[in-house]
Length: 274
Length: 297
Image (cartoon, rainbow over all chains, first blue to last red; front, side):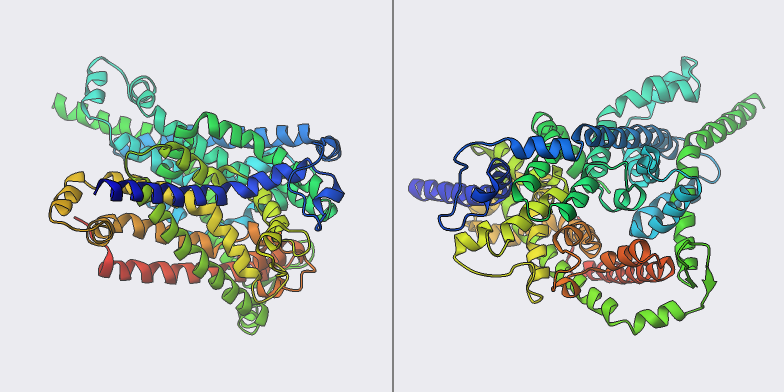
């Protein structure tokens, strides 16, 4: 029995290690290719796995040609704009939907749920026309625009407020707090973990968004759209393509490795609470 | 009397604060999402000129064109092919991994971190590296397997190769959702089953599957909807002159091409309305079918 349990344990680890390798190989290959010369990258016989010299030319070239500092800044502003707007509006609305009673609430909340059930592409043409009419194409504002409010986040924060005990508000009201003060000083701080979850969720999906930046901004690009554009131009310079991909991925991966727990909870578990 | 007055002023208060709190969200949602739904449907009855100004009402012409458009139907098939690979495989593999990880073990956190990693990488970068792995001349895959397969330029397999990227990208996400669901299942069930001598496999099918079925249902619904909207991977992996493009482009890809490359937003809207209809029909069907296999206690 003991031996069998040990064997099972080892088998499980072997399976998990094989899957881990599958998940990591594309990232490793990205790193290895980025440091190779073009000749090494496209050498078939012999097939080169490790670069003979770890070259950094591809990095310096793409950083200069694609203007990576600006790409990072654009992406940061896109993320910051969407996160601040989403957390702020969703916290306010989530509290009202969970804890206040007023006329029109149920109908408005049904609109929130309705929005979540519709595929997102249906909003894109009118959103593009709006930004275009405002003369705001090719701005950071255009990148942030579709993410100014969030039905999903409103729902998530509503769930968080619903889970808080009622007597807190009663006590605050007896102490003479009005609704705004109760919200700001008593209730909102208690949903901090949900706000963080929504913030991370919003940040990651803003960072991954490709179609909207492709449509609205031809010049002021975030990382995702810049990679797409670059692929069209340097289609077969693999070391440079991989160097650019790596540079685009690194900041988010580093943040993820530092804040693993918050990332996984923020992205997956909040997705699961729907 | 005083009490009633206090009650009504409280109600008035909640009305004012409530609306003040939801107003930013509701204005945003109505302007950015609710009205656009109807605008898109409205737009699908128009033919759009090059500069958006030449809107000509054409009735059902876009719909008639679409129903006779072989490219659209091929895109529907491509989209389904993608989803039929991505959804079941990503769910089955994620489920197995979640069950294996749902115990005290060494390196549990490390495995979870690694499996989830693709979720935080930009799809554009993921697609580029996979495209490089798939490269028929210099790619790692053909070298390791000793094959000469044109993974992404052979019309017969391109969409499946892209679906493999999709599976790889989403396994970690599904797995974390399943792990959260598994935590809810009380350990006593398994203890009792072990005492009765039920094997691990039997425990999986008789305890884990039924008790996890609400989570499996939720993940399936969201993955089907997500899979039918595939765009990023196809846009990044398939070049405009790739011979397999016709057999790999998805509905959303066609929507993008028609609306923003060929600038026929009327026809683009018609395609997205078709996507909406397909997703709604499939979701309603799944909601109905769940009664047969999902257990809520």
